[in-house]
Length: 251
Image 1: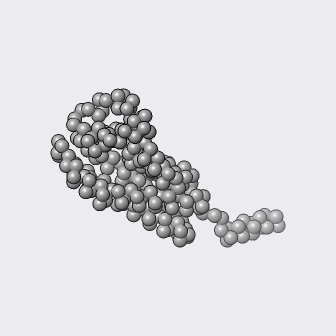
Image 2: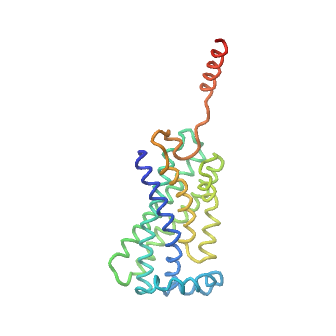
């Protein structure tokens, strides 16, 4: 990926994270308004925030039927998630070739999960096109066949990748830490707060941190410094410095 393309991906990742922080709660609240999601409001930790939030965001949840509102926010989320895949891909392309085997495999798992989740959300976007009352059965098929496996693989891959990047002292550290904590954060978002879209927000923020680094990179910066850690000083370079100092002393 070229430097210019990487910067555009970085901008996309930063914008997507900002929008996702606002959109994910609306997506969750709109789901609670559907027949399938209404029962989740019986969970105390869900109703504690959802009931006052629904009153506050009433106009954003009642402009159409509950199913249509939910479907529209799902489509919006589908437009955002490719930023995670693209930013991770851009960051991987700029990692050092000599990265250890554990890190290389963790990148493959994470990228496979992000790719499958992106395909699933794209399929959901298509299923939800044009209908005033979206077909819930078709959406459930897409969710079970693509979106759910994609999210699970994304969480597993992110966790493993985060651990690998922490060991490699990857920068920005926020990316590595949020990825390493992907599983508990997803658990809190899905089981405690009540919707998996909220559990995915930390992934957006994690890759937005790397995206910001890609966005601000200088034209002259080496590719391996755009994302990740800098190359260590090699033995040959140290020897050149010693020789130069010796010559300077002789003069």
